Length: 238
Image (cartoon, rainbow, N blue to C red):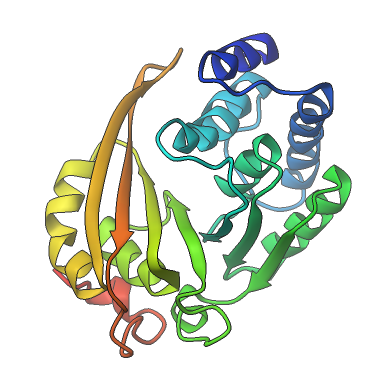
């Protein structure tokens, strides 16, 4: 996906990018590639693939959810900033918190935010399990997002405790979404969630399947969740 295609396909979805925003995506790409030489941030480094598989793919969540409001968003395990930083560039009014377990990635994100002159972003080095038990963050966010972090049953336990009641959990998945969702039904209910909608689409050019799962937080998460670090992954609620 070249930059013209990127702009055009977003414009078709009602997202018109300013010259400043276009330059921010370009700077994001340059910084990602530069830092990727000294630490493993992504296996995808050619420009057209980054624009398609990282930038456009991340922003695709906004085709099914309204990010035009000044929402508080937490991105769990964002790695090199996906999906929240591409969304933040497109919708500057959102407030973004990224939690990641690797301090090196947090340093990259801090440098990136400085380069892109992003406001209302913060980066926290922590495990999702301990972060979800922190009273400063527990049930404090309008939206919690994750992309390609863990299977849905595990992800639900890591993310839903952070969502305020009445808020939304958005999971971005590739092909196995239906099976994962079936296995995660119990976890979603247990964490106080209710599946609102599932959106399937084909990523252009590459023509691979993508799924966006939207879960509404209908009641408070029991205090015992999330469990200790490593436990959700070892013994998921299924």
